[in-house]
Amino acid sequence: NTDFIDNSAGVDCSDHEVNIKILLNAATIRGLKTTARDKLLVRMTDDVGALVLRDNYLQSQALSVAELSAAARLSEHAHFIRSLELSQELDRNVEHLPSIEEIAERQKQDAGLTRPELAVLLSYSKIALFNRLILTDVPEDAFLGRELERYFPPLLVAQYRPLLRRHRLRREIIATAITNSLVNRMGPTFALRVQEDTGADAGAIARAYTTAREAFEMRDLWQQIEALDTKIHAAIQYAWMSETTRLLRFVTYWLIQRPGSALSIDAQVAILRPGLRQLRTVLPKVFNGLERERYDEVRKQIRQQIPAASKLVDELALLETLASGPDIIDVARESQQDLQTAAEVYFRIGAALSLDWLRAQVVALRVDGRWQAIARNTLREQLHSLQRALCMQILAKAKRNDATNTVDQWLAERGHAVKHAQQTLQEMRALPNADFATISVATQSLRLLTEH
Image 1: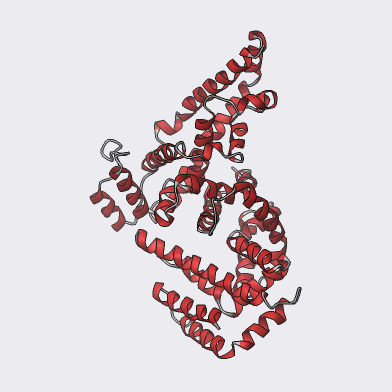
Image 2: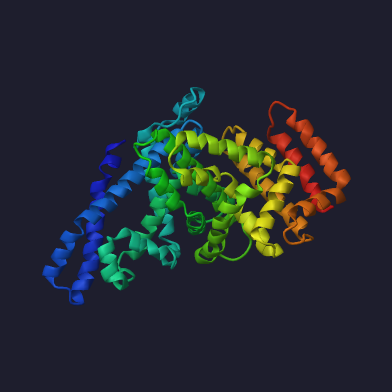
């Protein structure tokens, strides 16, 4: 680590001290005695230390996760550096970041940014995101206001909750907490990439990320992974942390690109969280084709890595498939079918039309630069959108709890078109590798089925 990462706890501790004193000064004006105030400060010492150490732990963890993909994301990191330079928020020479020529040389060597260089990007990413968030109404969001209670020691929250909401720096504290969570968990380039890909502003990105995190109850999952510190190899932990990031990235895009008014965190979490909880039980019962094979294989692999944590094994094995969760929940609501029937139809049609295989090919695509990365994400989103549309079309005529016959009937009604699409996919599966063009052609041939 760089010194500014290792020594950040000192700055963090000072920030907590100042913010606590601001709160207690307000309490003193309302009658808190100086002796009682001093005793309260002493009682909170260990809690403040724990909060500061937690921040330090998460920042170091973020760097370790970023290191895993540093070489693969070098183009993305280089684009981030150039973007900050263009907005005059960064001078790479001052921060000892590699030049354009040095980055080109590292690409030839399949090398990425070093850990100290990633630390610089992490810091500048937080500064840039905070500066944008503080100008939005995000710090006024009632749901995100809960970050105030996470920031202060529990003893202080319990005694002075009403004063928290009137804290002089509440907006800054909330914006800082959201920034730290998003950048630590999603990486330094995430916010910029989402903004460039979708046109969403910092406020919309923060709301979508928070909704995804809360709906999938990621803090609980992260805690389970972190509880394995010193019990399994750290690289395994970081790899699974990276998988949670992949899921949250996809769902953040999904939420941002939904039609309608501004995203309500409370409303979306209230819909998605119960559905996702139910799906964790339902999914292993309804998997078909490659989804079943992949789930069983991943579960077996995780059991070898984490032999004792059975609940965690089940949760991790479902991560990739849960990306379809919001679509399945939406389809069930719109078609007025129960969640299990919607899930059965979703995966049965996916297996029948090799959508599961196509998605696996998209994930396996190697990308060279930002535009190919965008193209890969677009293909993945198109496949999810296609499977959702097919599922909706089938469920429109479905009888409750009769997924198998409903799918078979739908396929039979489109016999010639389905046979043509399946033959096209069979030819593609015989190829050694599927590329962008191949997958695009396959997606288009399947999209035609929705028009019959």
